[in-house]
Every structure is written in structure tokens, then in C-alpha cells.
Image (tube, rainbow, N blue to C red; front, side, top):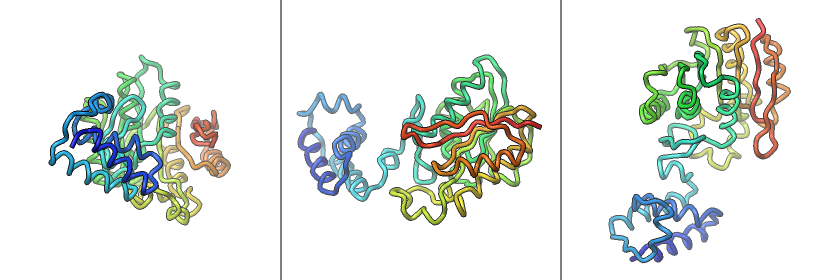
Length: 279
């Protein structure tokens, strides 16, 4: 068995199970099994694959055949400029969530010392990405899920920022520590009645997706808490569902926030709101 033959087996298996990304998925799974780069894989088609590695590759293929996300199989996902460890205890970082990082970096200059809070830290990819680029900032991250906190702590240690962040188990309502220059959150915002229609909801943690009735239940609680914990003129940056702009704007206005801007994602859907606490 060589690399080319293993790849062809993978291509055929995933393609026959209607996995549209069958080619790149197969190559990523085999390169992971061989512990080589995808580029190295393509350049060494004739290299042999031993039985142990091949069996490991087949196990991964069959997981992908069942539509398990590739990030969970590989246990990593690229986000912003780095790779992060993930498993089924946390949501898979998504490209649209990078807008939270981008907007935060626009607000905070390289030399400013700011205190940040992330509500719902999950894998830790958002706040870690920010702290790696803003060396003078400090942060607190909270999450109500113990398993997610372990993943966040793993990523914080992996990226060597543990001296600038503290992570606590807490839900949004019970956290009352400190005052912050900026709060960011990618809370659950899917309408609970729509969860069953999501393609990967059976694999990703439901609690991290379920935004309650209309999808705005957790968003409302985040906004209320941010109004209590932000300094005057502090910023709140939140990710929202594509059909929630007007509902969230109303919630923000009712909590004395000024809307700075609304950012659209790469699909031209409303995805992120930047706001300022007025009083």
C-alpha cells in the first residue's frame, strides 16, 4: 500500500457518501495519520503506508463518512492566524467569528493596556487571538461548561498567554467581578426550534448553540451583564444571527448602548455589532 493507493481509496469512499470536500478531506486525514504536511503527501505518492497507519486512516475516513466535522477528527482548527485544539466539547471556530477579533484589534492599539472580558470563552480562540497581538492587554474569560474551560485552558497554555488571562466557571448572570474596557461574546444565538435543521448540530455541543426562544435569550443576558460591567464608553462586540439585527439593536438601545457599526460576514449577512456603553 502506498500513499497514492490510500488516497484513491479515501477519495472513492467519501465521494460515494456525497462528501463534497472528499478530496481535501482525504488528503488532510492521511497527512494527519502520517504526521506529515499535505504538501509533503502530494509530493511523495510512492511512499509506503504501513498497516497501523492505514487502519488509523480508515477509522478517520469512516468518521468523516458519517459527516463528523473534519476539525473534530483532526482535533484542531485554524482560526485567525493560529491552530487551536478542539473536540466535541466546544464549537468549531468559524471564519465569521474572526470579525470579533478584527474589530477588537481596530479599537485597541498595539501599546494600549486594556482589560477585556470574554463571555462564553469556549475553545478560547477569540480572546487568545487578541491577546497574542495586543501584548499589554489582560483578560478574563468565563464559561458555564467545565469541559469547555479545560479546552480553553489548553489553548491558552499552548499559545503561552496564561500569565495574561484568568478563566473562571460562571454563567453570565452570576459573574460580577471587575470593570472592563471591552467585552466580547459569541453567545448561543440559534432559535431552539431551528437547531434540528443545522447540518452539524448532532456533533457540536447543543448548549453552545441554543439561544432559546427566537435565539435572543442569551444575547439579552449578555447585553444586560455588559451594561453592568463595562466602564463608561467601554465597547461591547457581539456576534449575532443573520436575522437578529433589529432585535439586538433594540436590546442594546434599551440598555444604554450606542450602535457604532454592524459588520456583515463574507456571505453579506449581518454578523457582528460593535456598540459603546453611554452611561
